[in-house]
Amino acid sequence: MRDLLMNISIERQEKCLATLRVEIPSDTVAAEKSKILSQYAKDAKIPGFRPGKAPLQVIEKRYQKDIKEDIEYRLINQSLQESLKKESIKVLDFGNAEKTTFTAQGSFTFETVITLAPDITLPEYKGIAVTVPSLDVSEEEIHTQLEGLRQRFADFTNVEGRPVALDDFAVIDYSSTLDGKPLEEALGRPAGYLAGREGFWLKMQDDAFLPGFAAQLAGLELGGSKEVAIVIPSDFPIEELREKSLHFQVTLKEIKQQELPELNDEFASKLMGPDKTVNDLRETISEGMKANKKKEIDDMKINQLIAHFDQLVEFDIPESLLQAETQNQADALVQSAAQSGMSDEEITGQKDALLDTASAQAKTNIKTNFILQEIAEKENIIVNDQELVQHLMAIASRRKEDPTKFIKSLQRGGQIPGIRNSLLINKALDFLLEHASVAETTATSSEA
Image (tube, rainbow, N blue to C red):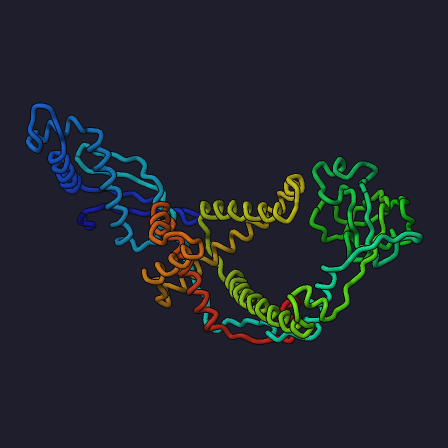
């Protein structure tokens, strides 16, 4: 098809949208129609005529609807490809052709609303400053891990004959009120663990549950009840409760004391197997922490790179992409919340907060994706077929699936381009990390 005979116009709109209008001249339409008729003539089986001998007028009349659809399909697709070359545009979605018309003069016209990739002005992306903690594992960190292991394998004994004290574990039943009404009634929606629990284990420390809660229970006798008043912190996740006074009706059911195991070779053998010592346990913890730190530091570098671009670069994001990614992020947050033990009521109560988080993360994800693709293009970073196949075969191997069948299933599902793009994004990130200016701080990874 000769693009110089095709009339193409693009009218840009907001949010990366544009209206593409195309007019294809009558001689081009006639040539395409002739090709299609010839193909139908070869394959058509029409009573009274030998195969391939039926007149074209008869074939056109018999298959009029199908031929018209085929002509439209071919003309539209060919003209869309020509528009890419002629206009030098990056199209994410060509949309659906509308106002398709065969004019009296024999030409063909249509228009479609297309989604364009955003125009991005990149800042300097080599030498981005990145700050990370040291990979070294301190004695204090090893000690903290060892104490955590002792906590996990502690025994608990019932305490009688004295009131509950700080550092005990209190097993309590409780309910709550706001302005004299049950919390969920006053709030008008589920309040999760704040509303009440039975058999709840509370570590009697100030930072457990809510600030000041444990201190007010100290001194309560076994089986006794007490009202605890707490002013909710100003940064609490449920906005309606911030700086409000909640009243908890608490009953102390049990008092338990934690008994930690001795940190000796016997404890190490229990965790790691016969003949293992505390030194073996310390070495294993140190190696594991170094591996975890390396992953954390790699993640920190990437997060700082993403934050760098997120702050410096702004551009329009296609609304359709933003909506789809927001839904993906919201689904992931809901799934994560459910896996962490939140009930459906608690998740529903956090709906607005979840959607706000999902929307912000979706915008960052899409911006980052476009920016990294732009960098990959500027640096001639590509993912060749060999790299793609090796990656897919590795996935199939991990899943213990036949590689050929696995790859074909991905092709049928149209997933290959997305996987190739993910690999491209990772290579662009590797490029940025390789050229980043990395400085080490004295902070631990958790503090950073």
